[in-house]
Image (cartoon, one colour):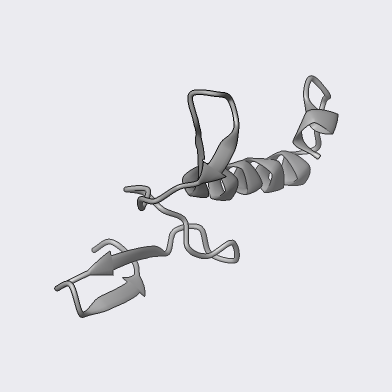
Length: 72
């Protein structure tokens, strides 16, 4: 889908949706040296955890106690 949109003039809502899609995909994939993509074994520092509300973030107070919410 992303390649189909490349270089095209997009309406703002479509552009915003495509940007969010690429953000979510990019935080969970790593490209290996051979050019193949694999699932990332890390957590992106500015991870988007909600496509409904992209300002929501995931965090941890301790290794056992996590939370989803907003920066204060």
